[in-house]
Amino acid sequence: MKLLLLCLGLTLVCVLAEEANSMSRNFNVEKINGKWNSIILASDKKEKLEEHGNMTVFVEHIHVLENSLAFKFHTLTLFYSIEEECSEIFLVADKTEKAGEYSVAYDGFNTFTILKTDYDNYIMFYLINKKDRKTFLLMELYGKEPNLSSDIKEEFAKLCEEHGIVRENIIDLSNTNRCLEARE
Image (cartoon, rainbow, N blue to C red):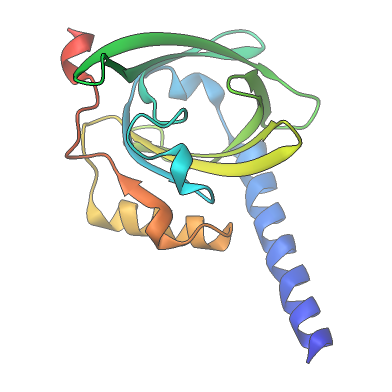
């Protein structure tokens, strides 16, 4: 039985690695340049995503640079425990030596890859955060529009589960304050 579980686990790892390699081989980074909207966040540590959690950020724009990606995010900051205000965050993620992988310092050290995109509608990210000898996973679904179809959301939820994130830790941001008014 243990051998069967080990084989199943290794098969899943190989399939996920091939999926990531396939994406990096066919990926055209220039096509992700532009405005995006945060649709869903997911993590194996749900507290990172709860209201005012340090990883609850809302993407506005991805700008492709020569060897990096520049992100413009917004985050909700709570003032005096009563008033929320949208604040801008700018981050630049640099390419790593690994194909299709980027790294950025934000609340620890993060490496991420783009799991899947159709360039015109959605993009899915897989991120690993390391801070104080602790690690957690974060997955993000962005859309060109403020919402996406239930089919794309379900596909993303299944990818989250394949990467060890339970459905209870998947947060749909479609009906939350994503600082959209701050973009105007």
